[in-house]
Length: 243
Image 1 (cartoon, rainbow, N blue to C red):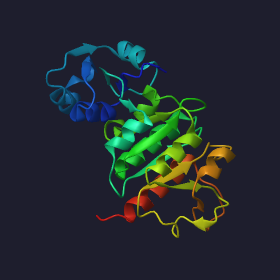
Image 2 (image 1 turned 90 degrees about the vertical axis):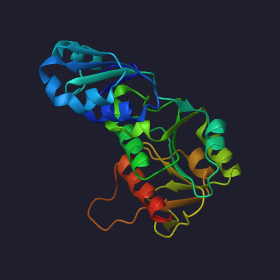
Image 3 (image 1 turned 180 degrees about the horizontal axis):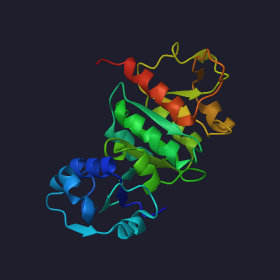
Image 4 (image 1 turned 180 degrees about the vertical axis):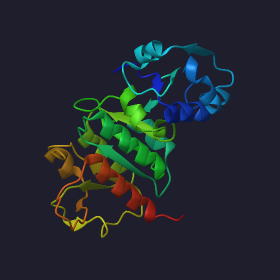
């Protein structure tokens, strides 16, 4: 699949990118035989060069991804450093999610989608042992990349410490948590930390957190996908704030 961070494919991701105009769109490629069904996207692309092409051309641009007849070439998503991001978000009830070595692009994108849906201030991720912000992750985010800040950090443990200094309380999601997510205080500046799909949160990162919380479960399955866990925690953060 394409590694070009400026390639956006799929109808919803492309439409959201064009509507948000958070990053400059450069050229829209549409499937000639499906042009009539793409009226909304073409309308949102006002001022953007539009090129009709065949399916093989779109397949090459999307490198085999499910493009649904449309591919957009745009500027790469903006990625902030921690200091700049903290300056952007002085809100007393800001909340965010930090991903510790989440390597699956579908999970990465799904977390971005949930963060955007629930109004999180940011998604933090590392430079190493982390899924890249690839077109596959952008597709999985279903437009979320255009609506939430993305923050890349070199050292996750230090990032947690830096956020704590800025007034955030860090909650690590772990099945062996000291309290449940429902009992944790997530009303102020809050950071939810989610671990790797197989190994969970690394000890050094977990030890930096203020408390460890678990998601209450009553069924036969005792664990959740990383992106599902993140979505539940982000929804709980949203629930604790005024509508």
